[in-house]
Amino acid sequence: MTDKQAKRSKFVVVGGGIAGVTCTEQFPSDQIVLLTAAPLIKAVTNFKQVSKTLEDFDVEEQPSSILQEKYPNVRVIQSAVRQLQAKEHKVQTENGEEFNYEKLCICTGGRPKLFTQDNPYVLGIRDTDSAQEFQKRLSTAKRIVVIGNGGIALELVYEVEGCEVIWAVKDKAIGNTFFDAGAAQFLVPSLETDKPERAVPCKRTRYTTDGANALSAPSGAFVISDRGVQNQALGSALGPDWHEGIKLKGAQEVSHRVHVEYQCEVQKIYTAEDFRLSQQRDSQPASEMSKVGLWPVYIQLTNGKTYGCDFIVSATGVIPNTEPFLHGNSLAVAVDSGLRVDDHMQTSEPDVYAAGDVCTACWEPSPMWQQMRLWTQARQMGWYAARCMAADLLQEPIELDFCFELFSHITKFFNYKVVLLGKFNAQGLGQDHELLVRCTKGHEYVKVVLSQGRMVGAVLIGDTDLEETFENLILNQMDLSAYGEELLNPNIDIEDYFD
Picture: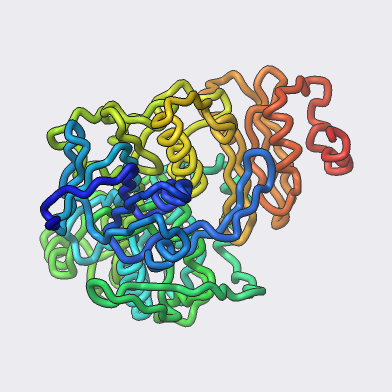
């Protein structure tokens, strides 16, 4: 059989990120092919079930050979997908191979949504190579501009040292994706103070690509972002603990200097020469923030301010990686460009499934769940998609997994533990809700969302130890009207009370 002839496999998974690898791992005996664009895959390690729906785990970047050693039934092919022929149940790869499948799962994640393309001064953090490029550029930088208000931006502005950071956000408060203005106000002081020393360095092995296919594990290799950003052409997404055990330091002797510009976006980018000419043409002096030296690039914001900097980081979200699969097929695409999937993770093409950032959940969701393109949901979707593929092949019924009953997520921002539950930002509730808030400066921030006297969401920042109790109250929908503000009374041990 030549490489041009199609090879048959019961299951084919495309994508070496968390969703794809988790899906692949659920078939311990069936022959399965994993197609990945890079030699590195993402594996879940140190998994811990914190409560009914809350999960805590690490994401580790590994050579694909480790996956094959652990699961002899898995065959990993390092190649991007050129085309899907859904009617023929066939996938063609860029390296010329073809694979026939009975069931296919697309887990190709998303790529950075850069606000401008092909500008050498604008960097999008997407994979190991671009993360290393960021570290390299930062080492000689005196000022950078960060555009965006999601998970990557939140982590980035806090972790960078030795470099002034101008942070432009389009919202009235930082972290609008995760927090309300009250929580943002609780976190802002962390940007103005020196960071605490890290108690324990990260000791996990880091791998990176060296050339086209070689692997190495230098101490400087690192991974980034709380959400699964995967570029199908360039390699797997980057992990959630990028700042552990590495040095993100600029060229200055400052510890932590962040200036936030609110409610603004990028209007224009100038090279140093273009900016000088525009100032001469308009007969206007450069702004005080811009005329200190001649910066390589200048960025004009919609609030009228202009800043010079060494480079710009675009952290403005992701676009689902669907391109190789759409041509010639009838795959339905959602408004956010993700592949539409039903409650069995099936797309509109028979025997084609999707999981993680590349898909959009289009079933009628639980009142307490919403899709957010985060690591936790990538793992859950990959795991559930594998169960659905196996059940459908055996023509067995399967119910929607319990993990889709309640949105729940654990992460860390500004060195605080953060837990998000249910409709944590009152999503979709309109005016039909009330908020209870407890805040101790520098220690904890607790917000509860109530609708008709029942808890429907919560934000917990700091070591509150309330997550399991609040999870139960949201799931049980107990009427809490009688408790009023006493629900968050710090003198009442609410865990024991409701247990």
